[in-house]
Image (cartoon, rainbow, N blue to C red; front, side, top):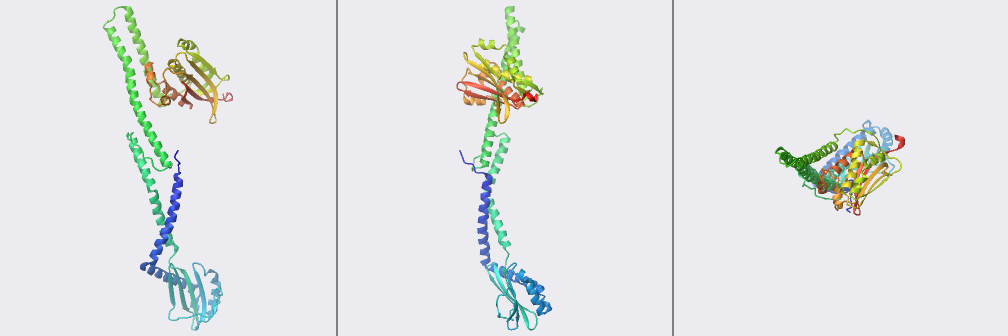
Length: 458
């Protein structure tokens, strides 16, 4: 059995791969750009711009425009804790010769080299910069502001990383997206009537399972279409045969092509028998059509399944004996009740009993049982009929017995409509029950399960 990988897991894996590759690729792209001439120039301009913005804030925070040394010292102490946000910032108050009078951080620096001709000195290294700014306070004092930070924010790297990650993810999932589109295209073609269309099986995830289910659906639809065509052919044959016979004998009667009254009575008897057969066929077709389309009004009442079976078997033993069949009836001692239409339920049960009488091998045994079983948490009354059929039925043929519009040639040879089991299945379906057939050695067992009602619920 193929190992199925969850599509969700695949997408998560693709996302992780895309993030990792996006981070590596994005970082390399950004670093390569930063090393280029245009990149370096952009970083330098960005560094200058950021540094000047910081200098402007420092001038405002220290109130340098006041030219008052004591005010600046107090403000240096006040803003000292906030200086490290967004980079490393150091502030020195020095005299004309560069001797440090006050500094932030108690760095231990006693003298700075002042280049009064260069008030702004910015050095860029990669994405970071260091700037030395000399700001004149008054004739004897200067503020030296050392500013370290990023010349370009991490947002640029993040944007490149996200874009690259998204592109990589789309490339990784493009095969799945294309496959989904292929599935959709094939489904539309199947819906338009091309039952030969199939979806190629790729990958090993839920999409593969979906493709297998679609192919199975297409195969079933194709078989149903073939069965429908065969069924229409069978209907035509079943209706035409008795009708042709009736027309032939009625013509003979009309032309008085009989030699005596006895022969006339035989012709009339044949006409009557064929007419009844034709009526039965039409009723079966009509009932099946109503049941399968749910266009039927059902009576709803409590049904004692035990009593229904006994009523159906009353007087039937003689017919089983005439065909050399042994009938064994095993019913649950306590009554089993269900809820539904008594006429329809009786028809479903009677159909299985009638089939066992018609199609059982001579000198064999027919076993009819009724028991109560718990299935998936629900209590069911299980009606079963076991018999050994005249004709050998393979597992494949048994599986097809309940398929819509499937008709076995054995049924036609007995003069039936071939709709008995289909009607039976539709009746059981209307009552939320189940019906199936199982091959047991040389025999076949039909089961009908009806939802049971507890006596205290009556």
